[in-house]
Image (cartoon, rainbow, N blue to C red; front, side, top):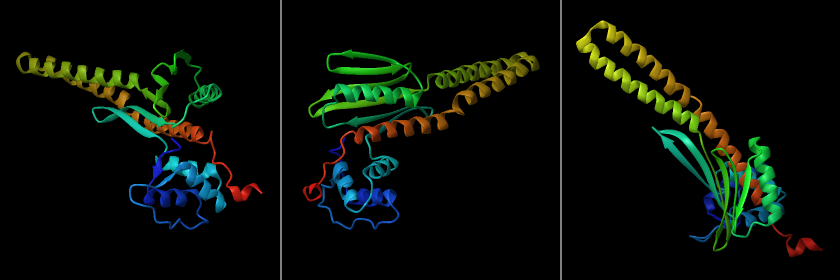
Length: 229
Protein backbone atom coordinates (compact mmCIF):
# COMPACT_ATOMS: atom_id res chain seq x y z
CA UNK A 1 0.00 0.00 0.00
CA UNK A 2 2.78 2.46 0.90
CA UNK A 3 4.40 1.73 -2.49
CA UNK A 4 1.39 3.06 -4.43
CA UNK A 5 2.58 5.94 -6.61
CA UNK A 6 0.54 9.14 -6.90
CA UNK A 7 0.56 11.12 -10.13
CA UNK A 8 1.08 14.87 -10.30
CA UNK A 9 -2.63 15.73 -10.15
CA UNK A 10 -3.20 13.49 -7.12
CA UNK A 11 -0.18 14.98 -5.31
CA UNK A 12 -1.57 18.50 -5.70
CA UNK A 13 -5.06 17.44 -4.55
CA UNK A 14 -3.74 15.59 -1.49
CA UNK A 15 -1.70 18.56 -0.29
CA UNK A 16 -4.62 20.91 -0.83
CA UNK A 17 -6.68 18.67 1.44
CA UNK A 18 -3.89 18.24 4.01
CA UNK A 19 -3.32 21.95 4.69
CA UNK A 20 -4.92 25.16 3.48
CA UNK A 21 -1.98 27.10 4.86
CA UNK A 22 0.57 25.74 2.38
CA UNK A 23 0.96 26.05 -1.36
CA UNK A 24 0.43 23.03 -3.59
CA UNK A 25 3.67 21.31 -4.61
CA UNK A 26 4.81 22.46 -8.03
CA UNK A 27 7.26 19.68 -8.61
CA UNK A 28 6.97 18.23 -12.10
CA UNK A 29 6.72 14.46 -11.97
CA UNK A 30 8.04 12.21 -14.74
CA UNK A 31 5.27 10.64 -16.82
CA UNK A 32 4.28 7.21 -15.60
CA UNK A 33 5.95 7.70 -12.23
CA UNK A 34 4.88 9.72 -9.17
CA UNK A 35 5.29 9.72 -5.41
CA UNK A 36 4.52 7.01 -2.86
CA UNK A 37 2.52 7.72 0.28
CA UNK A 38 5.72 7.61 2.33
CA UNK A 39 7.32 10.19 0.03
CA UNK A 40 4.24 12.41 0.30
CA UNK A 41 4.41 12.19 4.10
CA UNK A 42 8.11 13.03 4.06
CA UNK A 43 7.48 16.12 1.91
CA UNK A 44 4.67 17.11 4.24
CA UNK A 45 6.95 16.84 7.27
CA UNK A 46 9.46 19.17 5.61
CA UNK A 47 6.83 21.90 5.22
CA UNK A 48 5.20 21.33 8.60
CA UNK A 49 2.26 19.08 7.64
CA UNK A 50 1.71 16.12 10.00
CA UNK A 51 2.01 12.70 8.27
CA UNK A 52 -1.43 11.62 9.50
CA UNK A 53 -3.01 14.65 7.79
CA UNK A 54 -1.48 13.59 4.49
CA UNK A 55 -2.91 10.08 4.96
CA UNK A 56 -6.35 11.44 5.85
CA UNK A 57 -6.27 13.65 2.77
CA UNK A 58 -5.32 10.65 0.62
CA UNK A 59 -8.20 8.70 2.17
CA UNK A 60 -10.63 11.54 1.44
CA UNK A 61 -9.64 11.28 -2.23
CA UNK A 62 -10.09 7.51 -2.23
CA UNK A 63 -6.37 6.88 -2.75
CA UNK A 64 -5.79 4.33 0.05
CA UNK A 65 -6.50 0.92 -1.40
CA UNK A 66 -9.02 0.15 -4.14
CA UNK A 67 -12.72 0.50 -3.35
CA UNK A 68 -15.05 -2.17 -4.73
CA UNK A 69 -18.83 -2.44 -4.87
CA UNK A 70 -21.64 -4.86 -5.70
CA UNK A 71 -24.99 -3.65 -7.00
CA UNK A 72 -28.49 -5.08 -7.13
CA UNK A 73 -30.85 -3.28 -9.52
CA UNK A 74 -28.45 -0.34 -9.50
CA UNK A 75 -28.37 -0.09 -5.70
CA UNK A 76 -25.11 -0.53 -3.66
CA UNK A 77 -25.82 -3.88 -2.02
CA UNK A 78 -22.16 -4.62 -1.17
CA UNK A 79 -19.01 -2.59 -0.58
CA UNK A 80 -15.35 -3.41 -0.05
CA UNK A 81 -11.77 -2.22 -0.18
CA UNK A 82 -8.62 -4.07 -1.23
CA UNK A 83 -5.28 -2.92 0.18
CA UNK A 84 -1.93 -4.24 -1.09
CA UNK A 85 0.47 -3.62 1.77
CA UNK A 86 3.63 -4.29 -0.21
CA UNK A 87 5.04 -5.96 2.91
CA UNK A 88 4.17 -8.73 5.35
CA UNK A 89 1.66 -8.05 8.10
CA UNK A 90 3.23 -8.99 11.45
CA UNK A 91 1.41 -10.92 14.17
CA UNK A 92 1.25 -7.78 16.31
CA UNK A 93 -0.19 -5.75 13.43
CA UNK A 94 -2.82 -8.44 12.79
CA UNK A 95 -3.85 -8.35 16.44
CA UNK A 96 -4.15 -4.55 16.34
CA UNK A 97 -6.13 -4.80 13.11
CA UNK A 98 -8.59 -7.19 14.76
CA UNK A 99 -9.01 -4.74 17.67
CA UNK A 100 -9.54 -1.93 15.17
CA UNK A 101 -12.16 -3.95 13.29
CA UNK A 102 -14.03 -4.76 16.49
CA UNK A 103 -14.03 -1.14 17.63
CA UNK A 104 -14.91 0.31 14.22
CA UNK A 105 -17.79 -2.05 13.48
CA UNK A 106 -18.90 -2.65 17.08
CA UNK A 107 -18.73 -6.43 16.67
CA UNK A 108 -16.59 -9.11 18.27
CA UNK A 109 -16.44 -11.31 15.18
CA UNK A 110 -14.60 -14.60 14.73
CA UNK A 111 -10.87 -14.97 14.01
CA UNK A 112 -9.48 -17.88 11.99
CA UNK A 113 -6.12 -18.74 10.47
CA UNK A 114 -5.20 -21.36 7.87
CA UNK A 115 -1.50 -21.29 7.06
CA UNK A 116 -0.66 -17.81 5.79
CA UNK A 117 -4.36 -16.95 5.35
CA UNK A 118 -6.10 -15.03 8.15
CA UNK A 119 -9.64 -13.81 8.46
CA UNK A 120 -11.98 -11.91 10.74
CA UNK A 121 -15.70 -12.38 10.05
CA UNK A 122 -18.92 -11.14 11.58
CA UNK A 123 -21.84 -12.33 9.51
CA UNK A 124 -21.44 -10.86 6.03
CA UNK A 125 -18.72 -8.48 7.23
CA UNK A 126 -15.22 -9.84 6.71
CA UNK A 127 -11.54 -8.95 6.60
CA UNK A 128 -9.20 -11.34 4.79
CA UNK A 129 -5.40 -11.31 4.82
CA UNK A 130 -3.90 -13.05 1.78
CA UNK A 131 -0.27 -13.63 0.74
CA UNK A 132 1.10 -11.91 -2.36
CA UNK A 133 4.48 -11.86 -4.09
CA UNK A 134 5.38 -8.63 -2.26
CA UNK A 135 3.86 -9.42 1.15
CA UNK A 136 0.19 -9.37 2.11
CA UNK A 137 -3.07 -8.07 0.72
CA UNK A 138 -6.08 -7.18 2.89
CA UNK A 139 -9.62 -7.48 1.61
CA UNK A 140 -12.44 -5.78 3.50
CA UNK A 141 -15.98 -6.51 2.33
CA UNK A 142 -19.60 -6.69 3.41
CA UNK A 143 -23.06 -7.23 1.91
CA UNK A 144 -26.40 -5.83 3.09
CA UNK A 145 -28.16 -9.19 2.85
CA UNK A 146 -31.37 -8.20 4.64
CA UNK A 147 -31.93 -5.28 2.27
CA UNK A 148 -31.42 -7.57 -0.70
CA UNK A 149 -33.97 -10.01 0.75
CA UNK A 150 -36.57 -7.23 1.16
CA UNK A 151 -35.99 -6.02 -2.40
CA UNK A 152 -36.26 -9.52 -3.83
CA UNK A 153 -39.40 -10.10 -1.80
CA UNK A 154 -40.86 -6.92 -3.24
CA UNK A 155 -40.13 -8.10 -6.76
CA UNK A 156 -41.79 -11.46 -6.09
CA UNK A 157 -44.86 -9.75 -4.65
CA UNK A 158 -44.93 -7.43 -7.66
CA UNK A 159 -44.95 -10.53 -9.86
CA UNK A 160 -47.93 -11.85 -7.92
CA UNK A 161 -49.64 -8.48 -8.39
CA UNK A 162 -49.08 -8.73 -12.14
CA UNK A 163 -50.65 -12.19 -12.21
CA UNK A 164 -53.59 -10.91 -10.17
CA UNK A 165 -54.01 -8.06 -12.65
CA UNK A 166 -54.19 -10.52 -15.55
CA UNK A 167 -56.76 -12.58 -13.65
CA UNK A 168 -58.71 -9.41 -12.92
CA UNK A 169 -59.17 -8.83 -16.64
CA UNK A 170 -61.18 -12.04 -16.73
CA UNK A 171 -62.47 -12.34 -13.16
CA UNK A 172 -63.75 -8.85 -12.43
CA UNK A 173 -63.18 -6.07 -9.86
CA UNK A 174 -62.56 -8.37 -6.86
CA UNK A 175 -59.32 -9.59 -8.40
CA UNK A 176 -58.39 -6.05 -9.45
CA UNK A 177 -58.62 -4.94 -5.82
CA UNK A 178 -56.33 -7.82 -4.83
CA UNK A 179 -53.84 -6.79 -7.50
CA UNK A 180 -53.81 -3.22 -6.18
CA UNK A 181 -53.23 -4.42 -2.61
CA UNK A 182 -50.36 -6.66 -3.74
CA UNK A 183 -48.83 -3.76 -5.66
CA UNK A 184 -48.84 -1.60 -2.50
CA UNK A 185 -47.25 -4.40 -0.48
CA UNK A 186 -44.60 -4.92 -3.18
CA UNK A 187 -43.70 -1.23 -3.19
CA UNK A 188 -43.40 -1.22 0.60
CA UNK A 189 -41.16 -4.29 0.66
CA UNK A 190 -38.86 -2.90 -2.00
CA UNK A 191 -38.67 0.50 -0.28
CA UNK A 192 -37.79 -1.09 3.08
CA UNK A 193 -34.76 -2.70 1.48
CA UNK A 194 -33.67 0.14 -0.81
CA UNK A 195 -34.13 3.20 1.39
CA UNK A 196 -31.34 2.24 3.82
CA UNK A 197 -28.73 1.31 1.24
CA UNK A 198 -27.21 4.73 0.36
CA UNK A 199 -26.53 5.70 3.99
CA UNK A 200 -25.31 2.21 4.88
CA UNK A 201 -22.90 2.06 1.93
CA UNK A 202 -21.47 5.53 2.66
CA UNK A 203 -20.81 4.59 6.29
CA UNK A 204 -19.16 1.28 5.43
CA UNK A 205 -16.96 2.88 2.75
CA UNK A 206 -15.86 5.55 5.21
CA UNK A 207 -15.08 2.96 7.91
CA UNK A 208 -13.05 0.81 5.52
CA UNK A 209 -11.11 3.83 4.24
CA UNK A 210 -10.27 4.85 7.82
CA UNK A 211 -9.06 1.35 8.65
CA UNK A 212 -6.86 1.45 5.52
CA UNK A 213 -5.45 4.81 6.62
CA UNK A 214 -4.53 3.48 10.04
CA UNK A 215 -2.74 0.57 8.36
CA UNK A 216 -0.78 3.08 6.30
CA UNK A 217 0.32 4.84 9.47
CA UNK A 218 1.74 1.61 10.90
CA UNK A 219 4.99 2.42 9.08
CA UNK A 220 5.57 6.19 9.04
CA UNK A 221 8.47 7.52 6.95
CA UNK A 222 11.91 7.43 8.50
CA UNK A 223 13.49 10.76 9.48
CA UNK A 224 15.71 12.24 6.78
CA UNK A 225 19.49 12.20 7.43
CA UNK A 226 19.51 15.98 7.99
CA UNK A 227 16.89 15.73 10.76
CA UNK A 228 18.77 13.11 12.78
CA UNK A 229 21.40 15.55 14.02
